[in-house]
Amino acid sequence: MVNKTKMIAEPGKQDIFIVRELDAPREIVFKAFTDPKLYSQWLGPRRLTTEFERFESKNGGSYRFINKDEKGNEFAFHGVYYEVTAPERIIGTFEYEGLPRKRTRKLRSHHV
Image 1: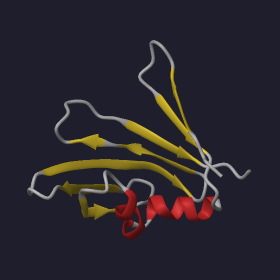
Image 2: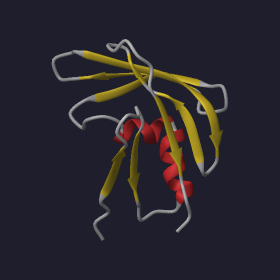
Image 3: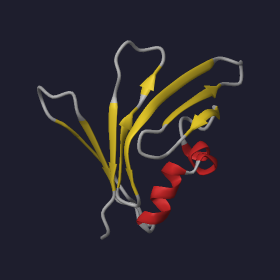
Image 4: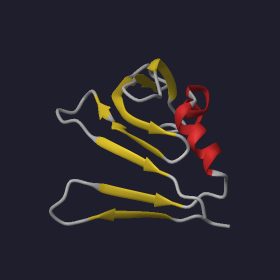
């Protein structure tokens, strides 16, 4: 089964919705977003390593991680978790430290 990714960007809004149906129980998908050992295995491009300085996947928690390439270049990201409700929703920010503006992301899982 091929699970296509659907992206929704409405004109005049700064939100981008990314929808993908996965052939896995939502509890496992949720764990992949909240367990740093699992998250670091799929986060970012495969050619980069991921190292977490902080990872608190809970309401009011925060995270910071660094992606490194083979030349030693570093790309740092951080954010806060406003809401973590297992296994259905994560609301938080996602910010690349090289950009001037903060981004918010939401993960909502539905049982199909």
